[in-house]
Length: 164
Image 1 (cartoon, helix red, strand yellow):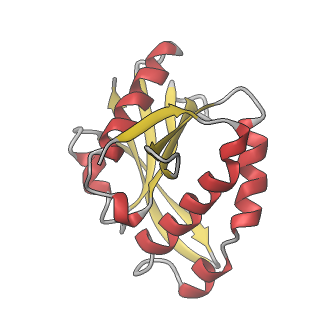
Image 2 (tube, rainbow, N blue to C red):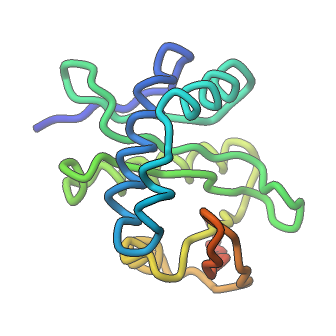
């Protein structure tokens, strides 16, 4: 199956929200409480993505030939100002993982950050997330650890830094 890649537009907000919620529910099922995952709302995420996509953004989507969004990635300047670039989010629908889409979105994210003049990419990843092996294949340095609260429970996030 062939996939297409393009910059996201505001009309993609609902599709991105669907991927975002579906991906969280499948990726974090054994990590985050079912109560929290069940509370995730496509409508709430849609509003968030409409706001993001209506501003200057660096979000790209992967679609099937039929135009169905199956994954997305969003990058930009690192939020704390400590590093240059940041991968804010990268999510794929479970059925489309392992097909090279994530690697292509990641590669395009790096290109976007380079175009912004960035020489590094900072990434937060939950320590218990099995998908973090994807990031480790790029040989990042663990530069931070932080406990975050999700659904009233604490989880350790690792802050990874890649030279790009």
